[in-house]
Length: 279
Length: 303
Image (cartoon, rainbow over all chains, first blue to last red; front, side, top):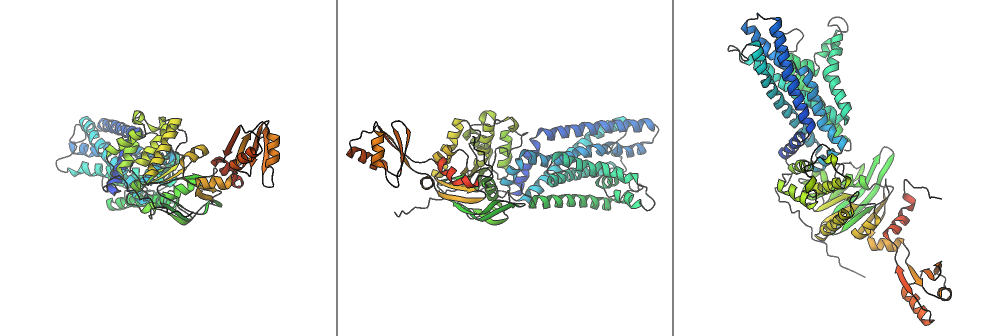
């Protein structure tokens, strides 16, 4: 029997031609994903409460320990009080970044993500950008809110007339640092794919290693460990937020380059893993 | 059309998919069968770029999935129902998926409606039953109204109504000229749904044929004959290529002769017949015969 089988007509998708991938759309998708998880909002709330609360306490302690500081000196203490809590909130930023990725691996969501956008570099870039921007915006708002109790407690203006950048610059650098910490957490998430592991690695890098570095003496044959510790992410961030010329601090350009290198290293490591390992 | 050419995937020393080539034609439902560990899921994952082939290539309508400009519009894929974040609501999951392609929220509501998950769309996916999760997976696959559907075990966990819905849905999609590749362990379901079957075993293609051809080639047709004079009938029918078994008093099962021959012979000899039923083997029989050698995790015969 010979039968001529007519090839079925290939159906076109009913979706309009405007339906296709763009990087901006992938960014939007990642933003929806981040903001539709309760864990994100809990992290943000905890960051806000811890940050503003600690800033107020620090301001109160500054006011109590030096009641007779001249106004200009007090104004100098404002950014210190506002920014100091990042030593703790950085861990939440890192954890939020890590969980944004590992939550997808543990639930299998990553397979949906990578079938919607199979170019993995684009997913990495979009996720990193969204996490960084969200953390930056949250941190900026939180720091600005923290200014209010700090100013009230210290009875001073936040932006001294002679030097308005004095407060703003450290705060902006702290905002940048929070975004960097979140991206480092996200990188550990991509590299390890496991929530507890990625959070532990983030805490280790941000919190534990600086302590280890501080144990070693600055002088002597082991001094290089102490020196090297200045290039850890948290130490570089601190160099940006302390007054210029503080002992042991990196210069602003060096500190910025250092943070940039950490981000680059994290993203490159993520990309290498994402590209080569099956999802 | 899905085209796999010499597709191979190794995990360490284990070869999950071994030099597999096939094409899945549009306008048909192609069933993907095989025991656990045969390489079906791995093959499906390679089609959509989740697993990278060790060698060989696979394309959908001539393009590699990872190079597509609008993958959701080309291919709808349901790999497993658990490809959803448990903390996100169904609707938000679909919104996030749709956003990557600029698919309007109107379409999100459409697929929610179509798959019947409207009542749970605002609940978190972690609370979903297996069946609801499966429907959410199908909804995600339909977002871009794709011309190719790849569904791994879509009826797994569905209630009878859901099973029927999937069957009608994929039949309809194939009727419209879409390409449908469907895997399932439920043979009876597959025999009602598929036009064409590809059977994998231990990472190799064991069969790739239209479903009726496959069943005919791998099963034997038998005829059930009921008569008050089975002993006489058996004597007359006996021949070199004929196998007759008396299953119970008054009932014979005959292999090697057609129902027409048996009926005519009985009439010639005046033997009354109370039943004459031609039975062809089932897809399940064919599948069992085919995969006997390649079942990786074989169950011990119960003594």
